[in-house]
Each structure stands twice: as structure tokens, then as C-alpha cells.
Amino acid sequence: MRRVVKIEEVRADINVTPFADIVLVLLIIFMVVTPMLQKGPAVKLPMASNPPKKPEEKGQIIVAVSTTKEIWLEREKLSDATFPSKVREAYERNPNATIVVKGDARLPYGDVKKVLLEIKDAGFKTVGLIAERRETR
Image (cartoon, rainbow, N blue to C red; front, top):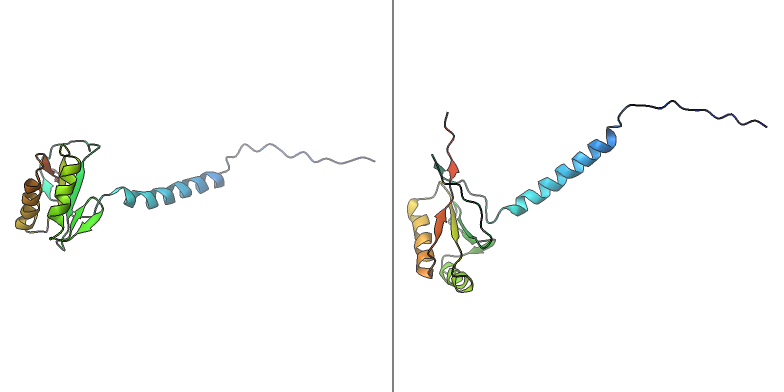
């Protein structure tokens, strides 16, 4: 008995399907992970013509003030009454830490200033404000 073996021609085409699957999985992973990287709520930052670029430090503490006047210390939402005590606790844990304030641009200046004064009263010496670079044309 003879067996008939069909020899298929070698195809030099690139199979795109596995590549597309990998790209879609990576896209989904980035879409899920990216919101988790942000500390505190999303706020509309004020614009500045030439804000200084400083890299994030390891022990940096982020305070965010949203348009609803909610205050966030890292990822914890605080009331106006509990914020000063939590900031003092953070200072006692790490007195050399840098605090960065993300104040929403639509807030009145007095609301952000009140938060800055409470941070100063807690004892922090290094406080910064986050701003976005204004696009110049």
C-alpha cells in the first residue's frame, strides 16, 4: 500500500492574528492600570507659563482639593474637621517629607490657601503646588 502525502507549500505570510490579540490584551491592561496610578481625585490643574519640573520623590505626600471642596490626603478622602489631625499624623511619621498640593483651578484661591495654612500649621517646611504647562504657540 502506498500512502499519498500532500506537501503543503511553505507560506511566507505573517500571521497577524496573534499579534493583534497581544496588542489588544496590552491595551486593556494599560486601560485598567493607568487610573490606579493617580493619587487622589482627578482635578483640573491651574495653568502656568513655565512651571518648574521636579521629579516625584519617594516619600512625597499628595494633597488634592477638588471642586466640591473635598480634601484628599493621598487616597483617603477627609473632611475639613479631620484634615488637620491627619496632616499632623503624617508630619509626625515623616517630618522631612515634601507635600504637594493639587488644587483644582476652578476653586477660589481662599479654599486652597486654607489647606496650605493647615499644612504649615502641622509643621511641614517643604510644600509645593502642582500646575500644568500652558501651551505657547
